[in-house]
Image 1 (cartoon, rainbow, N blue to C red):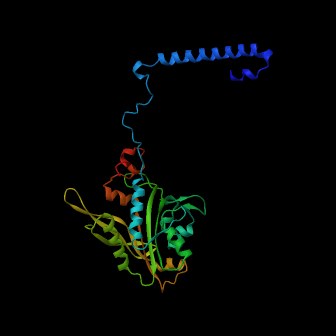
Image 2: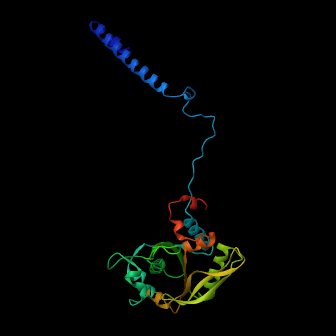
Image 3: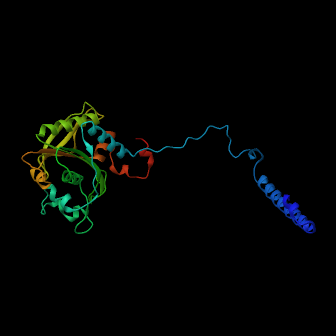
Length: 289
């Protein structure tokens, strides 16, 4: 309507009529739609769409998964002992997963039924000990690392097993490292994570990559007042063959290694009885942590 003044004088009557017709048509359509909307709402709801006098609804915030929390807590404890965190690939070759860890070709741990082989030269790693090999290949002693990560084994899923789970491996190599250092390190970790009243014990065992080897147990107190020993993980002094495989002088350097299951640690600390709860879609379980 404001631009009618720019229209030539002889065309203004026709332009003004057309503009008025359009304005009247649009106003009629707007009025009809407004009446339809108003008729469909109760009178009391014709106010603002949002009642700003009501308390607001705080959005629900997420948090780290309980397994991630456990991993971070373990890393923090070992960081205070001087360990650094190291990572490695989840798709590995047999050399890093078996050969350099002193696991011979005839060992049953290499059976295709017990591993996820992708082809003749690649597999999903079955242990995070592969990270230890890769770190030692890239640096000279002293080496003091922990290696958290996922590992894969074709286990049948039940309350205590899964085809994918998480481990955290520890390695310390230097001159003069002894079994006493290993026992002190593991014992201090268990007390820092589970509490100062937790007792630990070592049971003789066998692993191809450590010699001597041991299983670590912790003493748990049940609600009924009884106690029981529960296996926590494996450990031992690094086998000289492993040190030689990465070019270390096994006459000069010694070391210890240990492996802990993240799910097992979490289950023991929080009293979880079924590993499948960590992966179920029901978030009510996860909100507890």
